[in-house]
Length: 490
Image 1: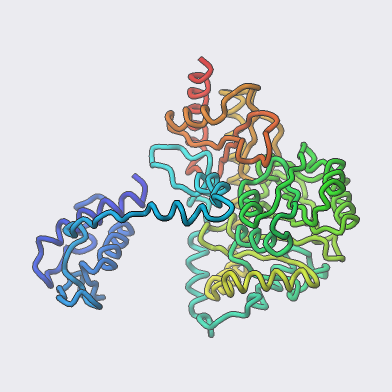
Image 2: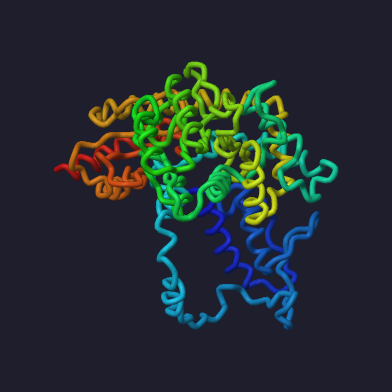
């Protein structure tokens, strides 16, 4: 059973137990609850916190946990009534919303489905070969906890931060992206609330509603969702093993007069392609000629495997003219909850990005920025990245070996970086039906269709090897996928 379901089950049990206690009665100790319910002390602590938030118990440091006193006013105090005893509310009439929400151009959530699929937590008995974040076992939890603790003690840690972000953090991102003595300075950086927020800011700032925006094909569904939510017209440009096809990129700019191209030059999601040296220069030349921006989503820079060759520099590091708007985040390499990233831009483009962010969210919370600074300054940060690179390498090796053994015809080219593999299915395969069959077999995978802005040229699956707790589970997940595949074919 996973931690989340354990907390829920224990909280339910304790609610029933507390109902039988008189007001002020002390609950058993945490140790006693741990032994009685066969759960971890962390689970007990979280379940108690749930009941305290509901007003059923109060915690007195050094004394214990007690049933809360009841208050009759129903205001700031507690009612003493358990949520289990609350009368069922009459269902509201929500039918009016159908008219209200259809009064404009139509539904706006059509691009969010794949994002929900990636973010939803699967049941404990399902092997997650879909998730986009590394498993908790790969996250630097001790480093993060220590960084948060130190950040909370920093002078002014709870003061309002500068709108653009803390100067020290912006300077760190400028060096991390452009290199020491590179073209970027702290004044070229805007701190964002993670990568998805950065993409939203970039596209809302650079692409007018109804205007075209060029994207790689296939590409990360979050890019497509952001573009559509911004009202842009998405134009796909095919990708091969060396990255975006620059001949087709030039043709797309000529045909559409687009003013922005969104790309992932390093370990592209989902293909894993790395933009070749020749095409790097061509992308910048083509965009500069078109008078357009390149939005460089450098999401996988910290997910390089230990057996990878030297990484190419970001496009932004070779761009003195402000063509590239670069996006980088700490989230993938740390935790889904450390939503700290950066956008870099030059000139009026940066001012527009800044204006969009301040309208949307004012600024990124200062404690998170302070924690990010503490984290990257810790000597353990470099060790964590080496450990993460080795773990991802081993998981990739396991996944590739399992696929060669179980489904040898599906595996295509792959690079030593990122966290996923792109599988080419035989023509005519119903990838949605295969994903559904795989789920019934106890493994969660991603069908390829959501990665295309237009009709896909062939059926695909994306298989992630980062969200699983062990290499053995990866192998078992591929085995379950083979059973589903054979069942569908048979």
